[in-house]
Length: 212
Image 1: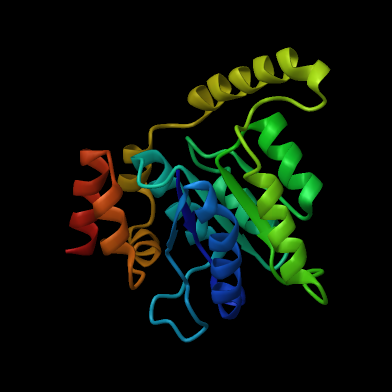
Image 2: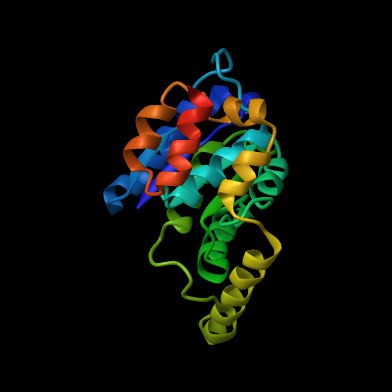
């Protein structure tokens, strides 16, 4: 699985901590991590939590990533931004039980963390344990186990509802504020990671035109 990490500007200074913690948990499981930044508060390309949502949607809808780890100060703004888009099912994850139950009950593809609120002593330990539970095994298996059938049924219903309530990603990219979009895809390593992993030619071509 390809896992993307995206940090917005207010919490960019924590990128290396989050990245190294995530890698330590998921790489032994055979997953790859792609760090899309921000890498520091001084990065030339500055990401807002809204742009984290845009970038998450581009990566997930194009197949360039299978899962996105993102967040902001509280995690709420990034979650709302991510869930504004088709093909993105983002949970607000605070602790290990959140991570486990979101994976098993909701079977989402994006997690938004609070990287400021409550991020004090032991924060890196909580982050590590939460990543461990979020990626503990095959997702969508249900919790508790006697709820497997209705939970899996409800997830399929939600997926179908989102198809109706959201337009397609390429249409969104063409109609969203183009400067906002360009800012979301102007990160230092975006081109290197995205175009090597993107599986949607139409999205790739449009992003190339934005960056040209």
